Image 1 (cartoon, rainbow, N blue to C red):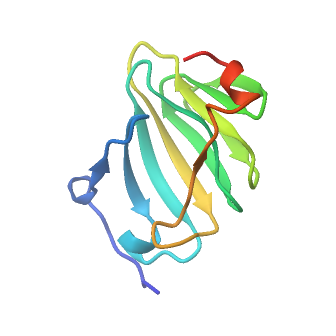
Image 2 (spheres, one colour):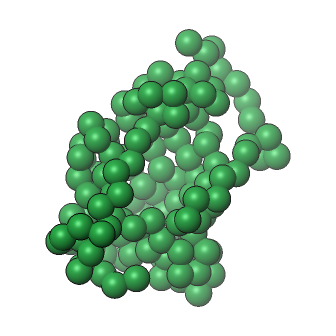
Length: 135
């Protein structure tokens, strides 16, 4: 258990998965967090995180910048700065940057699972997800 810690922006380590760029603000192996995982995600123009779900976990996505076409199962809408989405446990979702510039979102996932705090199962190549939105 961690009592807490301050982070400057320069201390945060950025990762570059296929779907964009992200940094972890809180997760077990970074801060000792036991209940939540928090990250900042940046999608380049045309960037996306295709259909996936988090087994046994809930998620909140909060848009900071840009326009994100957010899918929740088979429903979707474009979210802008200040708008958010709650994703229930095991619910398939996806995010697509539809801006001319970058889009940035904050993600909060809980409860923590494993040393990284979260797990994602990619389902974009499975029906009905692969036919919903051509990439």
